[in-house]
Length: 110
Image 1 (spheres, one colour):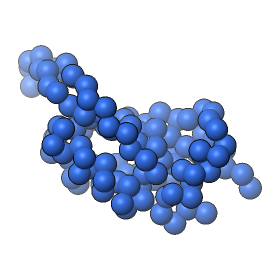
Image 2 (cartoon, helix red, strand yellow; image 1 turned 90 degrees about the vertical axis):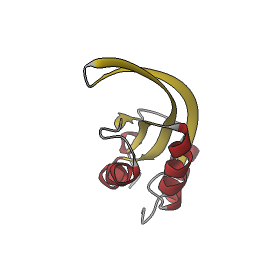
Image 3 (cartoon, rainbow, N blue to C red; image 1 turned 120 degrees about the horizontal axis):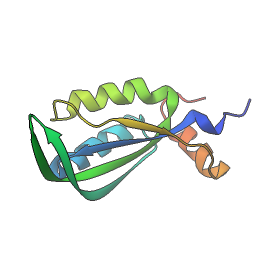
Image 4 (cartoon, rainbow, N blue to C red; image 1 turned 180 degrees about the vertical axis):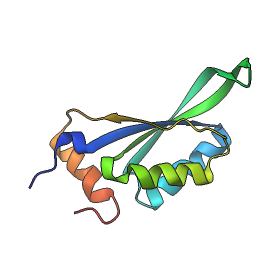
């Protein structure tokens, strides 16, 4: 049975630049993510009663919905932030060959 396109997700996570590369590499090596893109961003946010701004890397993580719990646990284990950004966005449509590649790139995926 063909997987639904909504079985695939993009997860967004920000991290300090010196930490983002390590995090991306671990997620791919452990096959929790098929691919992680890194983009430099400037983040403004409210934390501990003040407005902060930091240079961060945005991790754009491609995976399957069923990997989210393990992926989230791994990010929390490694990430230096007390409350890391972990936001999942369903992929509503996409190139079938690319989605199949995501599926075959993930650990224990059938």
